[in-house]
Amino acid sequence: MSHRSFRVRFYDTEVYKGKRKTTYTVRWSVNGRRRGQGFATSALAESFRAKLLVAANNGEPFDMETGLPASHAAPASELTAYEFALQYVDAKWSRISANNRKNTAKALTKATLALLRAEVPDRFDPVDVRRALREYAFNKLRRAEAPPEIRTILSWISRNSFPVSVWEDTKHVDAVLHALDIRLDGSPAAASSVRRERRILNVAIKYAIRQKILTTNLLPKGKEEGAAPKVAEAVDKRSLLNPAQVAALLTWIAARPRTGYRLHAFFATLYYAGLRPEEAVALRVSAATLPPSGWGQLLVHTAEPEVGSHWTDDGQVHETRHLKGRAEGDTRVVPAHPDLVAVLRELIKRDGLKPGDLLFPGEKGGLLAGSVFRRAWNKARKVVLPDHEYDSPTGKRVYDLRHTCLTTWLNNGIPPAQVAEWAGNSVPVLLATYARCITGQLAELQQRIEGPQQLPSAAGTARLRQVPGAVPVRRTR
Image (cartoon, rainbow, N blue to C red; front, side, top):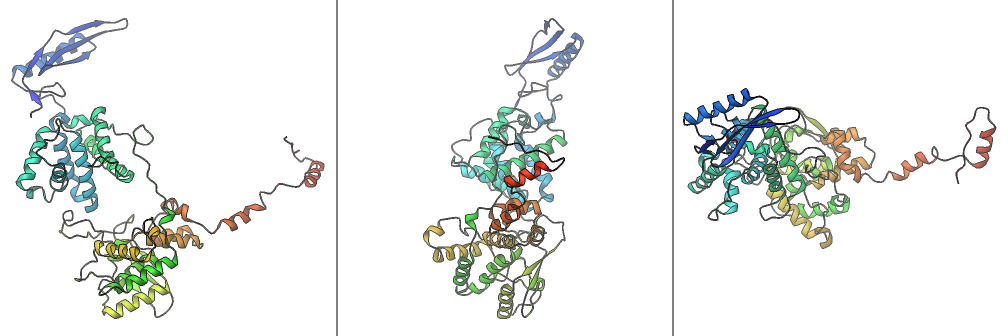
């Protein structure tokens, strides 16, 4: 469906004489929809009207959204919302991570579907429509590989997409915000997902403004009405594990056939050293200093997040990245607990690992797959934990081993700045994340302020009054 029309009609210029000034409004219609634009002087109004007449006489189509001829239309009326989304993906593709590419595709998919002129036909399955946009249209590497049925869906979307100028219409912006708030089945989306997708769309609109495609950003920000929902940054204390639970879980995992001992060492590294799973997966033997006894250390310098082969440039499931929140090439040193040193030394000896080998390879020698260690962890929880603990947040995610480690460090007096350095966080992020989990120091802290805050006795107050220049104490009833 075209968003332009040759059906243009002109009317007499309207003159309104107010108490303070006179205005002149040029009137015309496009495809039956009346239009008007006001001017302060008759000369300006007639000049604008003459330009419209010339365009119509030259056979130019007029845009049905803006009412302007094609030669006068702003860039936003030239592009559809779908075409702009494609342009944005292509412009950002080489500069963002694979995981960011995937999240951008998800956000743009919801926005594009909210900015259609018509309802998606029943002949298209809703799941297929979202898949066509997310996995093909907004994936620069796969767009040309789209099968015929996907191309049919994308062709319909292209014909029925509003011009990108609707991003400057609050009605359409509200429709996009509503689309971000719900899932395909109509249930509410997670607050963290909504916040992430709004942030992505804000970046896209800012790009459009820099490219002079749009002039303003109507997405709500900060404390504005309709702004993104707040997301709980603090760790849920219920997700933390105690040493007895960790010991039972690791013992069960170590007894698994074939690779149990290797997964045991992997999970022990998260618990003792607080590494992120994608950091532990990338760890090599040469990065571990493991003395025969006592403390060792791990040199962390690479992460291998698992994002899917469709989103990486080399077609691998994992993407090699620098450390989170750090400059490219930066490293950090993490202390290795004596018990962890013993576990890793035994692993290296048993597998005959060389300095350049991965500490925790998969069964086929490549990187350890997230599906493998997540499945093993879930089975261990199911077998080891009582039903009420298994159904609770206790250790529900593999990442909770890292949370448990960092909380243990903080609760046992390690300065936050040092914990942040070992963990690869900033101090503000560390404290915001683990503030609710810091326990065991209340009695000592209370003792520190008990004396300084104690008020003087009545006798002491009387003596104070007799001291020259002392400030009298007023009693209150």
